[in-house]
Image 1 (cartoon, rainbow, N blue to C red):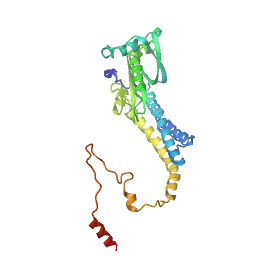
Image 2 (image 1 turned 135 degrees about the vertical axis):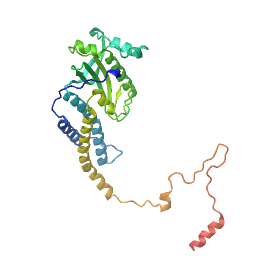
Image 3 (image 1 turned 90 degrees about the vertical axis):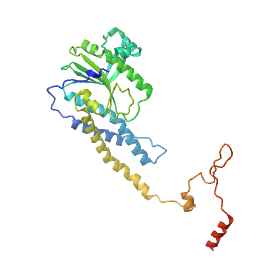
Image 4 (image 1 turned 180 degrees about the horizontal axis):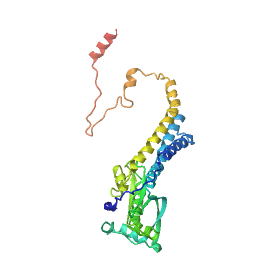
Length: 297
């Protein structure tokens, strides 16, 4: 990644539209859709608990696309041209360079895009074009709550690096004649996707990459989603809590000492390879037994 060329000059004019209202409504719709969805009951849990867990999992999955929506809305508000889920072509020559030993030396060079050399396409989550400043970025958006599967991660990195080599040339051929610099990045909101450090932007680095307050926009959307889910969580928890209150402990025939003793460990002794007992059971002497019986009488 051309780290030195990430920055751009902020556009003088910005659209007066505030995307927060639309994102808040989208967050509410996501929660409603998850709450109303049909889920198969997990046999490990009661029906009510299974429903709560499935709903939470569904909302987590839907959070990722909302992160992308929030970032794209902020870029559009700053008068950038924003394209979503664009199939960007990759040339054979670009992939060969990424796979070669010479790639570190040529990683910051621009390669000419050849229409006749296309070997594959990669789906780019956000393609942001700033014609005013001659800058463009192809961004893969990750929620980042956990590691991306290694094979998928490596393939994604390889494709992104190939795109970076030819993106500026490709955009100029498409009519964006003022584009001089094009970069790629993985926007990792929670920072746990596991992508290479030179490709990843997370935390404050996201704002620095775009020279815009993108993280704040994502945080506001996330807070709206959290509030909407909190409201539904109370309702989903009611039958679970009611069920727990109605359950009464059953007498299993064990006394207090038995219940406090660790299961499966009583009477066991570990023996060293030499045959020495490591934790011998305590031996009770006869006099002590007599004393106990006397006390009971």
